[in-house]
Image 1 (cartoon, rainbow, N blue to C red):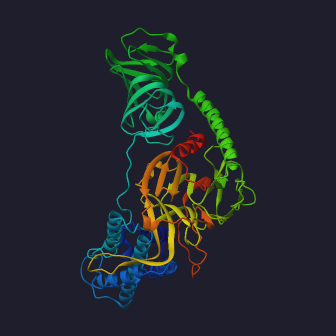
Image 2: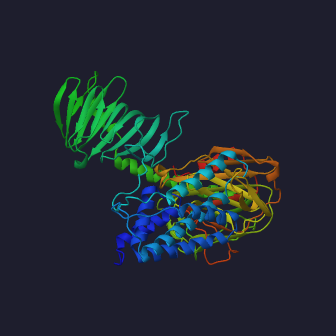
Length: 591
């Protein structure tokens, strides 16, 4: 195939290469990639250019793993013999032999690069993590060397999609009090099947069918499907457009079938009553036989008689929106006062807050200690709405090259990092929050791995070359510098896309502990082994939302920009206790 690639084919090729680099290439993807490379010289050239750029990243920190992986994968790849799309053997042409050779070498090179990146920041003394690292490398090996017989074009048939569970979204909550012992639900949370209850306040629920409920507490509902909900207690206004016609609310053994309308409902232990505000509904069951109610009609559907004025206590969407705006402004002012109070804290190293507009591509350091520079915004950093809509700003680091450059002087005895972030995806192997440039002794790296795990590490001895055994029949992995990565369990998945999160980590050498937090709650606590103890901490040149690597040997750089927004980054020379972390979250939260 010597025809130029179409725009669709170019987009597909780029997507497949991204999946190779990000360790998500499935066997189906690999077959499609092999097919494109074997049939199109233009595809091969584009692929090779991408390969050349990314292989240069291996020079950032030289390691024996790349050479060893290349040798092993070349042995396996050499035995793979492509066949035609129809399944019958064909004699290879001169072009196909060249294409096959370069494609195999390209995939082997990419496998080596990905394997190198997997090994670099894995915890050296954690057996379970070592197993995960080995499995990750093996999974890439398998995708790169899938059988090539009976290859067929797979256009229009992507790899298996990720799935989430839910029937709608919690659009908004105003002054909601969640039951004791139940974690609060944030705006943007999925409406999982099952019970939804709260003690006070107002919640706005958007079902995927198109129906919207404004519910006042105390309330107890059962989420059944996109098209149905059971109300055991609560006062609500239901807005059901024509696209959601047929949406059903069940209360007091009665089905309220909406025919494209807006109606009010009140349910308590001893009564249930409904009123049509606009349009038409139908009642079925518990003595009703498809009875229709029109605008202005009311009915008691429980055992108690109707209270005609009950509609006045029903929450309305417009009123709830206005209350929400007032609540956001109140919380914004509270967050501003929190930041102003922190600025005078002698423990504070730096406070970068976008609660106010940045000026001249610069985010001011509000700490009075004078240890840290302002953050200079570099590259395509976008100024976007922050966690307080229409009131604050945030920094979007979603495009490669985006970064906030800082320089922090001095030496420290402990670290506490805290930030507000909204993550759109974890599309890179490592996704930066705050990373020191050179990763030298005492310097921190704070990031999120592609599987949703928080990662924090401090370099202990950058002069040591470290080897990690891989078994009796395999050469050891080699890493530059003696350090340990402290991982949390996975905390992020696609259901949290676009939600504002408060992340924090406390690195406490004196107590030999590293503690990580999500939304003011501890999610991980790990001891610092004696061999990883380091008392003299420092930062120097560093970046928010990316990694600078100023000493690399080539123009290429690791792609670690956070695909998301950060609107606050705070750093302390202290190990803050859990109560202070929770206070930072609670007083700075937009909800």
